[in-house]
Image 1 (spheres, rainbow over the protein chains, first blue to last red):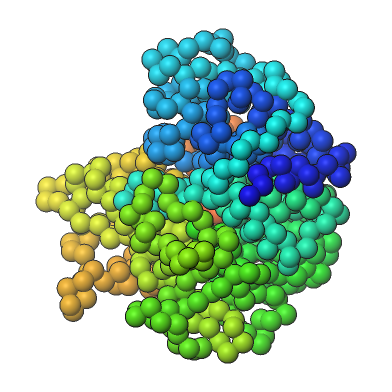
Image 2 (spheres, rainbow over the protein chains, first blue to last red):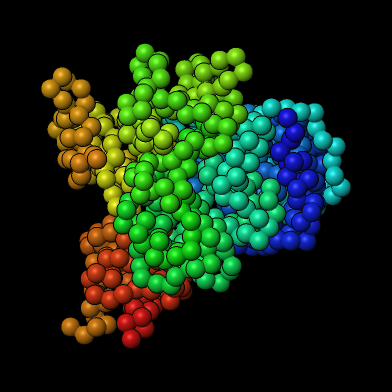
Length: 519
Length: 85
């Protein structure tokens, strides 16, 4: 399979002087992006970063992040983006799990990083005194300025590396709290990019505004979707002022596409304001959009086609619903992508007839290679039948007679909060293993109009534990060890975990006691 | 209570209720880094603004606000008075 970066370069060559990327700091044309990624790849060769080695990118949405992604691919290396708000301890675990050779991050983080596989660290801060020197902490890695390192690279086209399957590791929630890397191949990325572009129909006239982090597959694919069609990606970071920034960007720039999560669309439409008639499409995935938000989006974006989509990281995208099918297929999340099979299986492994609920399995060239260094979990979730590759999604679905899919819930206790998939066991495990005061803990979703679900932790403390001390400690441990979107929003202390009549943990009752009833 | 005072009381309530500052904590409402020190993410910011909208019975147009309005009590009060007029 052709290397994704070379595939993008081929299509990008025609767009040389057109804008490819607009970040908060700078604008790069297709030619400038090409040269920068060539420099990155040639420097990897010069510094001994070989085909297949892992490169960790732990910075905010920026041109440095994009150049690192494209340069890694061009080198034949495997990139992994880590959300910039991930706590340092957790980021170091991911870097160790990926066995990364090169890490791009802030100097502040890199100073304290001790991962044996790391040989080179590139900081994106201002120049430091220690550049080029071995790190004093004995980890044998060299710390350099990203920009100095990049500028020494060869701008000419590198030789295409021998074909390798693996292109990226995308880390997602794992119940043990251990990082779970989804292995995405060059073929997966290209298949998915082309399949999504079949319905989004990007052209060189498009400008897409994205606040989605590159560590999130929905954010990462905005890059591939735009660059493969000569469009321009306006890449920005979500922060506390995002709601104001969104309006400025939508007003000032001729944006045509606007992908977002439920929280973003809830925020954008939460206040009265301008109409954005130049937007031709909106996309949403990660969580369902409440009808009220949809109505407001239709009012504020009168000419936009709204695509409601569904996917899981392990195969990126499964289905999409054209807005004009909403009335005839209410509450559906649409039809499968081109060349994708979505088959609903009963507990015996037989295909369910229309209208009957079962687990959704997805088949196609976008189904990823498995979980990084976790063969047991890979065998549990992925299915190989000859040349066909499938995945068990763990989501309960049914299909109507027209082939439209309907999401019914999870087989397990996962839920979505702010667009992120939350595994309650991960949070329970992380907190209970680090805080001795916890006798029992149940984490569950509390319905919320903006986030879909907020995260609640119902805690039973050991005897003699001090509640005030615990509350202070638990927040501090959560901040140190869990990404911001996994940190519980509410802690409720109870005398005993709610149980069902059969003695199982009653998560619905726990949610009710924390201020809401799980829907 | 005049409008300026009403806005200031509402901002204080919003910070205490939504951002979790305890009333017992010493808060310098005109600290030039008041909002920078508060741990507000984008979702909390929305809740904060919606709270003010409801409490003050005004319509906030976020297009007319800027990060510079979120420095401290004084800057936000001035902004809300401006939006109201």
